[in-house]
Amino acid sequence: MWLIWLIMILVSIKVYNKITNGKCYADNVMSGKVAIITGGNSGIGYETALELARRGAKVILGCRDDKRGQKAADSIIKKTKNNSVRYMHLDLSSFKSVRKFVDDFKNSESKLDILINNAGASGVHRDLTEDGIIRDMQVNHFGPFLLTVLLTPILKKSAPSRVIIVSSTYHRFGTVNDLNRPHSYVRTYCDSKLCNVLFSNELARRLEDTEVVVNCLHPGHVNTSFYRATALEKLRTLILYSFFKNPVEGAQTSLYLAVSDDCDQVTGKYFVDCKEGFMGLKARDEELAASLWEMSEKMVGLTPDELL
Ligand SMILES: NC(=O)c1ccc[n+]([C@@H]2O[C@H](COP(=O)([O-])OP(=O)(O)OC[C@H]3O[C@@H](n4cnc5c(N)ncnc54)[C@H](OP(=O)(O)O)[C@@H]3O)[C@@H](O)[C@H]2O)c1
Image 1 (spheres, rainbow, N blue to C red):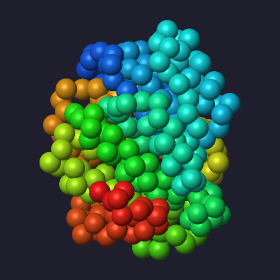
Image 2 (cartoon, protein in one colour):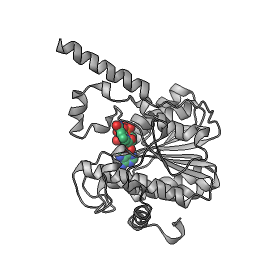
Image 3 (tube, rainbow, N blue to C red):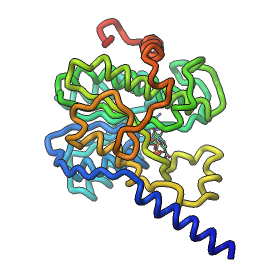
Image 4 (cartoon, helix red, strand yellow):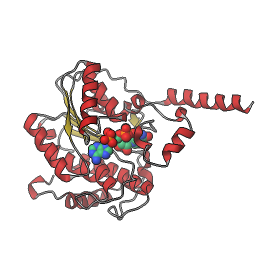
């Protein structure tokens, strides 16, 4: 009897999830648009890139692994028949790599309409990078910060344009004290995701007189390889797939922010399930966002002419 109840509960959860998941209904064609998606080789990033390519955009996958990046680009080209999809090397845990990516991009493209900061690490890698920063903190915040600031001139030149930052609902549990100290992986992850929201808000404020809009999002709890390296892997297999979105569902809010006409004037907001959601209290603190910005400028080593 208990088995029937268990099955009924799981089926109900699955049905509830399916009904409440946000979906991007905008059917905009994206021909002529140029988009960069970091971490576009797997999970949410891959599905986002696939859909943008299907709509005709030129898509650049910024990935750290040559084989995985090229394989994803080939697979998207095969599925969409859009040949303007390519992989470019980008390791967010290295400022040198980020700078090289930006130089290579600027040498090969004259505009950028959409930047999706999607790549993320789960907080488990607490060793220091070659730049002396906790690895996953650099991948999740400092690397994307440098990437975005360096690409802002081309985003401004290409305006109207959009920056999308994939954060997480766990930003609510983060702090920005001692970002460069080894903490538990949960804390590092939450801190980095709070940084994502604060960075998104501050960038939106700094660009409010331009036509570059900046928003962040929580994609939902998505069944991707993301939990692979954490204790949550076991939990994930234990609590069954019914509780998680699949990657296509997880990509819907990124896509909505990238393509929908509803979002062309919206900036400095936090989205969940394709609609505006509530940011945590700390994420709304403008002073905190400004001080994180100043600290990040120093950590990534921006030169005076690169400051925004
Ligand atoms: N899955 C969820 O439930 C969930 C919930 C909330 C937020 N998110 C956020 O969603 C985003 C995408 O995650 P996902 O769930 O799609 O997981 P995923 O499939 O593991 O994708 C993460 C991507 O980030 C890339 N990446 C990791 N380190 C990198 C580095 N140093 N340089 C460049 N790229 C790097 C990975 O590349 P490799 O393949 O080479 O490792 C991969 O392509 C993340 O920002 C995550 O925080 C996910």
